[in-house]
Length: 180
Image 1 (cartoon, rainbow, N blue to C red):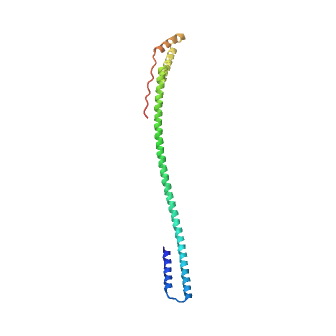
Image 2: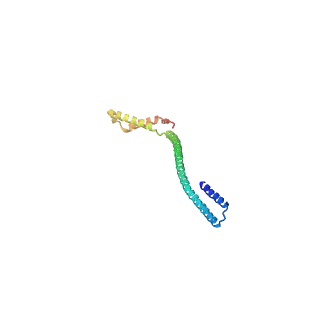
Image 3: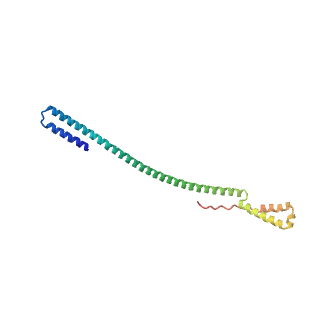
């Protein structure tokens, strides 16, 4: 802006000088040359100033751009972290629900298999454990009394088979699971 004002002042001076009556054409030509030279120099000065200020303005724009880019990166990283956190929470909730559903399905399957085995007359694990404990107790009793050890095997098997036939199959107790 200042360069334009300087150039305008030179033009006004040139116009003012040209209105003064000089009759000498050589002096007039020199005056016009001098004014043209001053106008030319003023233009070069304005151009130089514009270049300097343009460079400064360009550098300021670059610095502003760097600042803006950093702010955008920080904002993008914050949004990415927030989105990652939300996705992690959703995945965790989904995993909990899926695990709960699998546990329910597993319990249903176990209950149905236990009922089917009971209907088929197959003893449960707890019934087999009780039977093993009873057999161990009977073995100890047989080992303690010498008369019991002398009995033939066939005689011992017959009462055991009869006892097994008389005992009805026990139903497996339904498992109680904690809700998840």
